Length: 481
Image 1 (cartoon, one colour):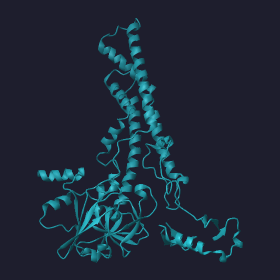
Image 2 (cartoon, one colour; image 1 turned 60 degrees about the vertical axis):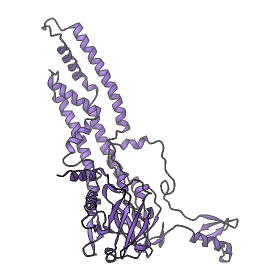
Image 3 (cartoon, rainbow, N blue to C red; image 1 turned 180 degrees about the vertical axis):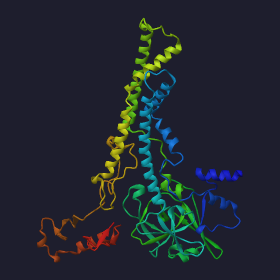
Image 4 (cartoon, rainbow, N blue to C red; image 1 turned 45 degrees about the vertical axis):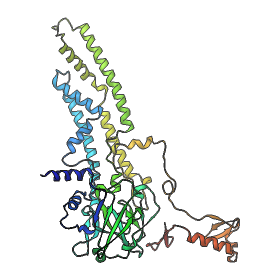
């Protein structure tokens, strides 16, 4: 394998790219005989999502390594090894079997949880999307994992964007669309995005297939609110440059709202998307309970060593019964006596405690999933525990730093009262009544010009979006966001 090929392969995994910017050619129509651009495209990652920790070939060694990083497991492993090499007062199986059981139970639990992450990844990667075929300009169906940089993707209403896209057009003649980024930043309000006027009128796959343009943008960055780039349009040999900003970018994980469809060109895929860059692979975390147990384990271990040292010294001083042949008093025998006492007293640290805790964590995660109080009826989504290792951390939370609207509240605002020209009015039975006036006394002639101007302003100067409800039995014909 050539050195350049090895360097390209390593660069593909490291996420380092050469040059000041990334060049994205629509429908991957690369310039001919340009090896450098072809090499750059070869280094772009695929669009597959990987949130799992293990694979079929690294599960056993990686899981064993993580388990024996725990002080308790390493302690019991050392006890089992010592029993195999000395004249142990008890059978080595009394330590080996419990240790194997603990490791097996933990491995099964973590393997099952990682299998569920594999299933979730598979579901996301196999979602169907339509993209423009570079061969005939027709829409073809592909899975999310098969989307490449430069593909023009069609996303429909209520679908999540499969990768980071630059908006080209939508059903709106001006190229506008609304998205929600609740999965990215927790905000439930709709955000307005708009395409460049030069591409807004290209609303079909056939017209986009002949779009002579390419994009130059910055390399992948984790900042959700920052994007710098430009679109270069070729108009009969004359290049026109248009600036691109965050309002033209549709991020992976965001969802299309109040718009039938949009077309966008993929600029970042897979691990290069802003969503993936903000999901760093964290090291193995230890819960508060486990850290507390490790502290007590060290204390008990010190007590065990002191106790075994004391008993070894007392054995040397007192000696054995007179009818027993005098034993060797050398250093090797003293060390063997010390290890024998450790084996005898190693039960001061109960191995069954860790089995109980692992089973309790697994059961606690199931109760999270079954908790009806945590079920979201509107979205038909129950609570989901991705890992059971940190269940108890929820009980350790002391402070919650969050914004209010849409996070601590439902972001459902209803009109209650207002003040017009110094007089207070409130809504009663869908009628506007002066403060203290009952609804049946309300007269339409009381609707003054000042009130008309107030409600006209209230109706026009806002960012609320109304969509017609599909359910005929809905209490209101329109849904407001």
